[in-house]
Image 1 (cartoon, rainbow, N blue to C red):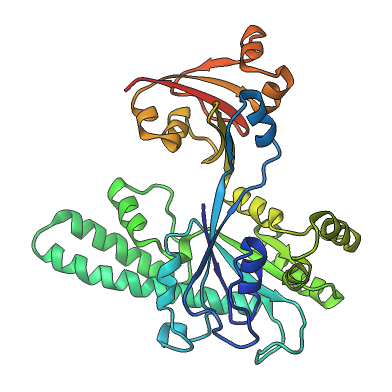
Image 2: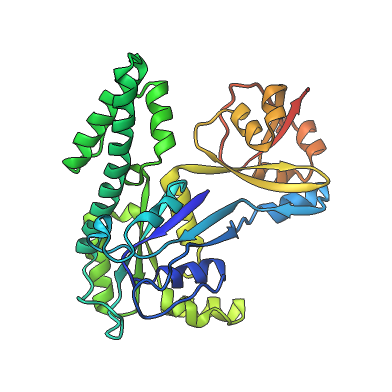
Length: 356
């Protein structure tokens, strides 16, 4: 999974990036401290994986991972060249999800022209994302026009589709993408339009009552299910503490610290589940979209497994830990044989049988 971190300047994007990835990206109290994108990869904490690895005596464990990318702050008018413009947005077009950091803290020392305004900040950034996408679509429209003039019927159909998208975005409406044809889907996949990506709003908090009120405004605007709280400055100050000491301190404050809530929110928004593969060499966790067949899980592991799929042995991670081994799971009938149409469940342990 790739997560692109965006937001206005000085809302705490790079501080959050550092806390999550411990990458030590430059942080300063002035606009556009981040110019070149910062990238970092974290492992998704998984309470099952270590226990599962012991069952097979696996030599190593590989957690599911998430790549985070922190780009320069957007400002009003970025599409017209204000600030750093929006050219750097191309770096996060490949992201699966956008983490939009919103200022919900009240630091009077921050370099900002106005007090925190979560709803207004969202509107500013959304407008710039829309304008960036319209620029991409209008370029594509001109290319398709040229091709359509040569009599290319497919280009003509895509031109009509692109013009419909442009009209919708100009009205700040989200287009209905539920019944797209293959060529339309391919066209959109190539463009990676930012305004159509899933967005998680990350409220950068402090421990004040005003911060709580700002978060309430944010949640009312975008829905609490699309938000997550993050205490970036506090987390930065505690980053060098011993894990147990840091955990106790955060619990005393009554907040949930670290990247886990953010990671969990990303999984929920993308509707991802986790499945496992186990052998003597490696115990590994994989992410997969909910509702996918076991053949698609096989493809995540290796393309040969999908092509030569014969069957899968499947058991829930909790059940396997309860039985203690694959052989005991087989003897008790808890290890199931599934065919290619099996829909993978969250925390399945899957052994793929295939031929090449």
